[in-house]
Length: 217
Figure 1: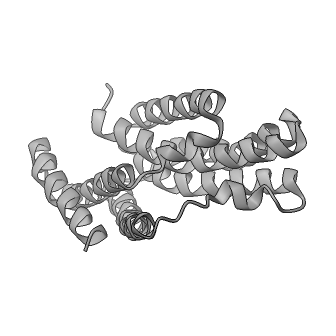
Figure 2: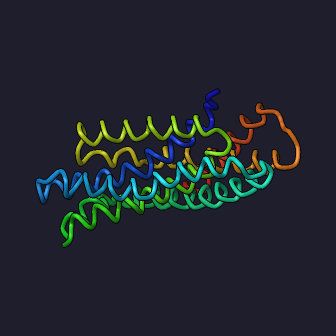
């Protein structure tokens, strides 16, 4: 059975992290005009990280659920707080009118194929750590959210080209951060007792407003 919350969290983190890798792939392709040296290198870097992640997810399912939830909750707490700080930086940059993207900066460097590979691996690692925390709760849901996210990024990279970074907006970061913090709090609670799933709604509302207030303060 698909868990919508887990699927949304996986979808959000996938869009957030892989969209930047795709933007770098687009920038490298604009310089080299080689799909293999740009998108191929980027995908290779992502696969190097993400394939073992989903394999490891199956292994983690064998660990006692209490330990898994505590481990997963801690990972989500760390990345939720980290993403909240990133949301604040995005808001501050937008107030200053900053427009320079990571992709445009990297496209002027040397070793562009290596850059595409390393950025793909780095962004995939960010997504993988969160997905690894989601997999034990619902492997199918996390895999579905990830697959939909990859498909959306691929379509947007093809049709929007350089504008793909518009995905990485403060509101999306705010939403994903709140999702991660919500599941972190809920899974900490589930490690010790069985709270109602309805508790997710008020926790998410509080988390979203807290991140929003922090980012815009």
